[in-house]
Image (cartoon, rainbow, N blue to C red; front, side, top):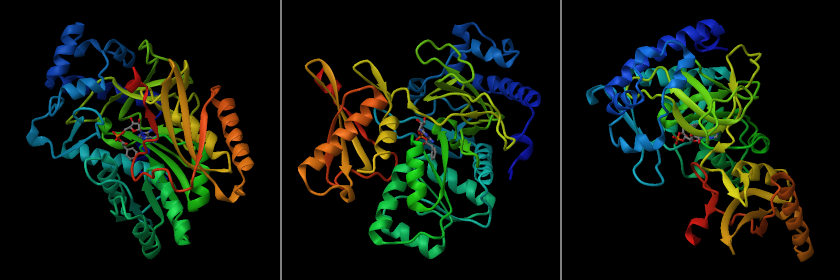
Length: 430
Ligand code: DLL
């Protein structure tokens, strides 16, 4: 099942040729952006010096901070009259990053979402409930127009009012949902409280934040869906950059539109297939806001093998962002690893919070996790046993001693969009 079979299955040689052609065009386009004109000049590079795909390595990186410095429209390569939509990233600190789209960009973007949804077997027969924020976040409108392009029946329910969301799924016979995995967990929890059956559901599209395979099993079990991982970032249109196919073993990234490199985040050195590092992407088809060697901050690797579905080289599921990685007493920990451990332990729930402090110059990690009442007799010795079990499982997986606090079911925060499960308080104590 293909949306754009020719481009999704291009043989390697043809793909390389197309990528180079599109890269050259992009290099010309970015000359409309002051930042790039200066960057190329300072590096002593002219667009015509790039003669092969490997030559891209001669070009400097673009970082998120560069985009912030260009606030608001400094990275637009077309006049504002050609920009028909603006989105921004959430920007937890300082100004958000602004992204712009031409009419053609919006068509290209919708086409990429259509590829993804068709790849997992969705069609105009499906009823699609889009349970993400429809504002500046790219997840709402991005998926909306892709789904409409395929001809799906789209319910733009956005976030909030979980009980109403569940009623809509039931009343409209929804077959496909899209939301963050954190919200999907909450949805499952509320459906359980309501004793609501979600029999019409068959597919769950989840993304916008890291989530583990244990979380996948949990969501599939509770919601009765097949769950697919969806990856993207605003700077590269939004969702639709990479997506799992039915194999659900790695994500297809659309190589005709995105030139991918994996680098060592510390040295900038380009790594080989099968080596984990930061993904750097040069989008090849963006008009309003082309970028060169954009450092996504996301940690993944390129798979060596192709895929039996016939599409191109895949990337591994994103482990997290390099800036989400916690370094606790010299050991690297991604929140997704903690999630994986906790979900394997039936005595505790699937919600957790991580607090990191510095006590007497030592990093201390405390994890709050909800107890599962079905496994708790009410006796203190029971609590101690469960607590020890969690501490041991975390120590085995992370090679790190942690403090675990068991808390009441339902007492930890739930999230409608991206979850914020880590509170690093070390900076406060410096
Ligand atoms: O999260 C776009 C999106 C919307 C993707 C809906 C998928 C579904 P931003 O808000 O700019 O855009 O955040 C992008 O989120 O750099 C990753 O760190 C993280 N991220 C996105 N998808 C995944 C995923 C949207 N499937 C940032 N797995 C990215 C892990 C993800 N991390």
